[in-house]
Length: 221
Image (cartoon, rainbow, N blue to C red; front, side, top):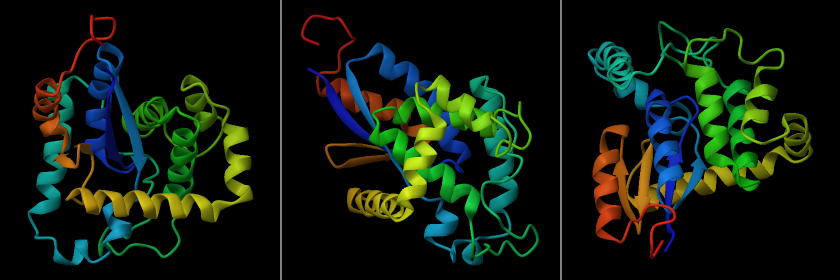
């Protein structure tokens, strides 16, 4: 029996990127339905977050994300440009956020078309693996969408015709994440139980095994 679960996920989250390759491999091997739900970065959902943040938070965050990428054998560099427009000194968030809003809308559309996980995988690699500068220009997004089985131009046209619908979908996803009992990403939710962080992925799989997890093609799957 196919086991469905939900993954709350953000394009600006390095930890979402660090979890995605394992999630893709897991979903390919096991009889599961990974339902991606795109949310805005915490910097937009909770602007006061950076005001409350202690001075040791950011240095450790930068150290840990690079270290975890090295541990997992994943290429890693912060996106160029940053999907969030933010003052590097004051950390104040700009009012307008065209980069993250658009790629998040594209992620919502990919989910609507049933390609959410593949799109999250390919776009997060584009942003975070360090192979591309200026990911927002040229045909980078189009090529990543094609790898996920999608047509970027068709997606963009649909979004441009009704961008407010995509904002509403993200707000609904964020409300669901809160209802599930957490605020951060990536967050894996199975039967209303949240597992927050890429470092809880193994614990999450343990819970699925307790509930009949089987490999694809295995009897009973």
